[in-house]
Image 1 (cartoon, rainbow, N blue to C red):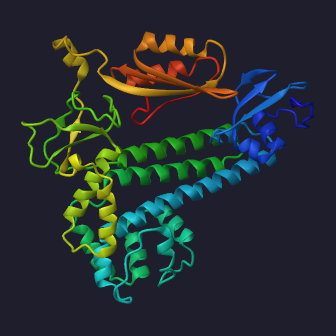
Image 2 (tube, rainbow, N blue to C red):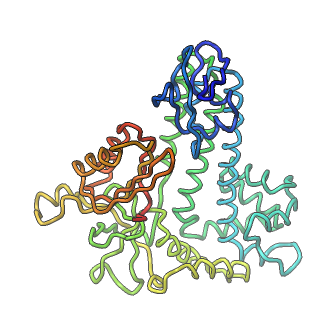
Image 3 (cartoon, rainbow, N blue to C red):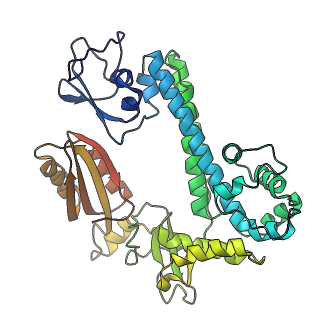
Length: 431
């Protein structure tokens, strides 16, 4: 039954996921919680005769493991269609990042050596890229082009496609790339890998079938593990000038991204300063404060004259730069062993790092008290905040922790609190 008395006719063994999609496809796609007879249950809950089902909707979205718990053929078909669409979207995003970064890097060369009409500007948006199709390629629509580039994310395929699109000798593009010290900024590599990883997970989920054997489940699990393993092994980044790696100074942590020992980090320092005179500011990978520095370094390494179209792009990046950060360079950093340092220097704070935790939960009495007790016992609270709606509450805690592992343990414990649906770390702080 639903709360309004409507009867759901479901097959024996149907789960809460099947019930949500039988009500309506949008209900299933936006489900973030389920209540049976007024009590929260997992999505995998097997329904029984007489159960009163309440589906909580909002900002939820299907997870890849839902395919394992969906028993209805109709539900699996809807989930499969959803994951196929998400796969396309992720590949499209990866292709867009690859193409736009490539045009930003090689724009001057393309404008200078293209056999097309003189005076054209390299496209800086997807819409502008559409106007150049098909060229000598087989693509009539930009979406098909980007999805294919996202799938075949090899540099050789990108060289070939750009060469046909803008009528530039492929050898010139390959030679120009070989002469570069760094091909792509690390943040671009990370964004591409994330999109491709999301596409792979969506593909695996869409290929799963409820009727597969236990061996099939193990096989898919191995595929996921192998994909994650290869991703971590191949993600090698090189920052700055490849000089000696410095240790991060915890007195110079970026206030906008709040790095913690254990995070992947990169440093910035004024160009005219050496490591003996001033410590490098420590940033998390992906911090907006360091992104423009990476872009400027990449542009500076390109000795080709910058054409008008690329100049506008570079200038737009510089306009977002703070004046005080205009003359910075990147520095390779790594974390020191703070546990060892603590044993020698007792004056060092036990919890030197700050992080903001966001908790989304079903609103109930004593929710804030229960969460605050755990946070205060496991860390040091700096500031708190809360926001409630009719059904949900969002709690924020700015805390001090000793490491990324310490933070993860705290978040795992908060996730076990009754009614809590989501615990996540914010990038920086909004408190």
